[in-house]
Amino acid sequence: QDMATSSSSQRIGVVGYGHLGQYLVDRILKDGAALGLTLAFIWNRNSDKLKGLVPNELILGDLSSFADRRCDVIVEVCHPQIVKEFGLHFLSQSHFMVGSPSALSDPDLNQKLRQAAQQYGRTLYVPTGALWGGQDIQRLNDSGALKALFIRMSKHPSCFRLTGDVLSDWTEGEGRRVLFRGSVAELCPLAPNNVNTMAAAAVAAGTLGFTGVQGEIVSDTALSDYHVVDVEVTGPDGFSVHTARRNPARLGAVTGSATYNSFWNSLLG
Image 1: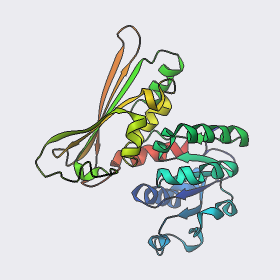
Image 2 (image 1 turned 180 degrees about the horizontal axis):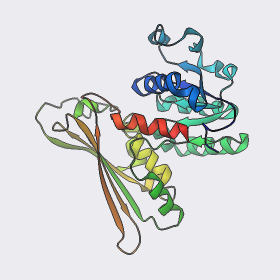
Image 3 (image 1 turned 90 degrees about the vertical axis):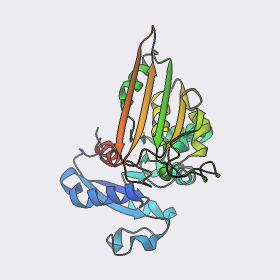
């Protein structure tokens, strides 16, 4: 059953108030009532950022007291670390939508979250985000016909948030630079905030998983107006599909603008 179409209103908790969190909170406050969605709480690492922007009674100061707000669905749009620290607790009380699926590249955490969802009769949702053709990849995977999957994400260097100093020396006009190519499992810890599209693909392509799906991140100073996501799917007997998606994005933006609407649609069902 779709999350937003049950007879009574679905109470949504939003964890994180960056650009994506703000967008979801604003949409729920504006359009939620007509769609059967009510905001139960908003939590942000720095709660001062929420003052004056959202109703005070919706601000959750301490995330560990989330259960008091009796949510039907908790949406994480914050950081993989929150998934690691609170994911199991969230699932013990509600359905859980993981906005930072790069956290699932940790096989132990991935397995524990899936087991918890089963144990408590909850659903662990992974939104498609900027992944084009995710359901097709999943169908190919489920039929046993998915042989390989490769995803390349190309962005302006200001849009990457990398661990370490891999990109600290970029200069305007330098052009294209391949930062990393390898398994999505290796890539997730390097760029936890940038590779959620790849992580969503690794979840859809369960037989290949995080170690089997290959990814590449590319810094390109020519990409000042959009991010590019290339997906190459390989099936049996020479079958292949290649998509190239241009996602409009401002300089310095981790999340492309088309991803917001995609995320909202995932929440609706």
